[in-house]
Length: 327
Ligand code: BTN
Image 1 (spheres, protein in one colour):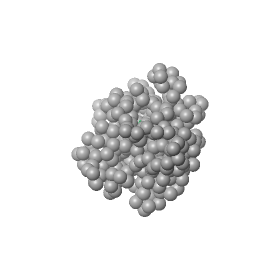
Image 2 (tube, rainbow, N blue to C red):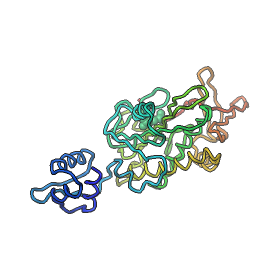
Image 3 (cartoon, rainbow, N blue to C red):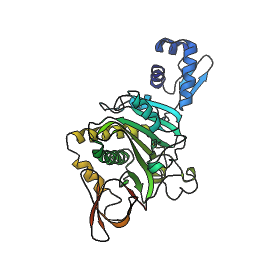
Image 4 (cartoon, rainbow, N blue to C red):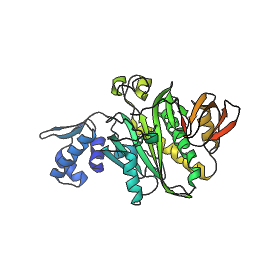
């Protein structure tokens, strides 16, 4: 299909006969017709006319591995990209693939999720075609205790990719929410497969609201959630560009982790933090307490000054006044 698409792209706006396409792509006329149908299902606008053939219309931002692979400059992340129009959850899909041996760096993208998952057992609203819903497989050779920083790095990579592709500066709400003016723009869900001291693999699920309009969010989320398009105003934002940039930055951050050189990323997360300096309410199950968030530590934990004056380092918990995109 990639061959056919490339020929159509080279002739964008002009008709190419079925015969020429079949010859150049090395498939039968019937095969061409089938592949054209599939490309249309992915969202490509292809006209057909008797005796003229097929014509790929103007560029539409189709989120698809074909598009993503163009100009992808990573070594590991995104070398394998899978796409489905609909899945229950890209994290589930990636987990099954990873258990069957899929390599580090594989990316699983869905047009929509019927059972998108958020943190703490919540759901995640992932409407068709409006957002970037994807998961990555990583197989880091570190202990599970060292993992929290990876979700921070993921949030930083997402924030930087958004800035690079749209000019929008989002904030990171510890540990891994992306927010803009206090409204939730995206989130990260890390799911571990491993033992007490051994990581088999980690699935990193990333959800970013891209092209939603206000009415696209379900009631209850309208005032809490936001999309890049709502911030940027008009124009469609390309999920391909955003994901390609994310993979590039994430790969750099991930490699830096093993060279013990993530200082810049932690600094970025601190500088663009929606949490530091703010009052927070921490729920650690057996203990709920209030305080002020002081600093982000190099291992991804949060240093807090409790109202009692005690200094605590929080590794994983929930900050109660969180805005969210959960149902
Ligand atoms: C959160 O903020 O609670 C995390 C949300 C993570 C959502 C993404 S969308 C892609 C991936 N697949 C899922 O089922 N969840 C994550």
